[in-house]
Length: 217
Image (spheres, rainbow, N blue to C red):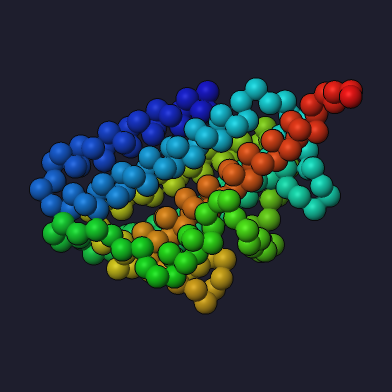
């Protein structure tokens, strides 16, 4: 039921963006960029659902190694990270000027560097700060939290339609001295999701390998 609610909301958001594209004689480029962000959010949620579908709680809550994360913890971390960014994003969008004319939104150099390092398959591990470490180890609680955070992220993207969100910056909730523009922040969050969903895929693949019956020679 929770997933169905998310999907219904996603369709409504996509329809609203497409309506804006049809009605707008300007800002077409930036609206298409926001539409792409919405599609990526929906795609990430669908990918997560496909990965966990049919899995039992033991598979989704287990840590393969003492210092590794479970699937539930990966999803909880994604939800926590999104929620950490959203207040600053919402405030900056509220203060962003209207976007005049048709031009693409710029990501910004620093955000592009972060995105490059976040993309899977990753080679560099990034230490997670205490405030973003997984708090929820139960998949039955982590999953609805993840889905809800995806819905909130979609709403934030939709609220940015028509605004020059690449001209307003936010302070990173992770590294206080770092700032980047809102469009770059959206793209970073989505790269971060791809990173950890790839991690989920690796966890489940290794779990399947360990559980596969061993053939005798």
